Amino acid sequence: MAVVLHTEYEVGQGDLLLSVVIGEGQLGSSLVRLGERELAIGDVSRLKVGKGSTIAGKQLYIKTVVTDVNDQTDRTSVRYELQGGEVQKVIDLEASVDEEGGSVIYRARFDLKA
Image (cartoon, rainbow, N blue to C red; front, side, top):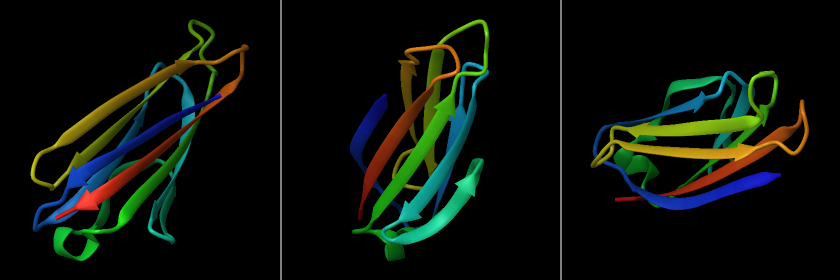
């Protein structure tokens, strides 16, 4: 199963910071790219993506795989937090796995605008 997000984000003049939060007591890992350049793999907390003036016009890609390890629920969720732009943006996505121990792939693309 896959969940896809495509949206825009207005960068400011300062540094853009990204956090990816895995919810529901599940296990997850992310891959973050700015254009073709890989920025991070694993846990992502306050990752410096770049200065707004240098990253405007680029695309920020995030792939997060969340695996159901919590016996209490089959729900998974991911929160994307972007800070440092014109406004702070928080986006919550959720999906349920089809079977116990299954995984959900979350794919996000942010078009970075000046």
